[in-house]
Image (tube, rainbow, N blue to C red; front, side, top):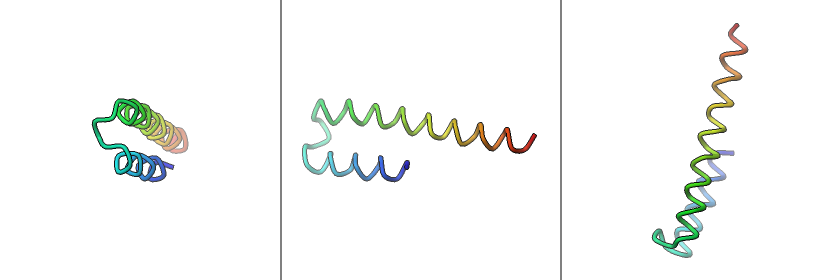
Length: 50
């Protein structure tokens, strides 16, 4: 899932440029989703090791 987000973001940057306001907002949102996904994975790992 994280790699899909990164690929989509790269496609947006290639099409619209990295300074485009929409691309920057989408990038920020994707970063938040990636952090959330990583936290969920860590939480599952911690819970399964108990």
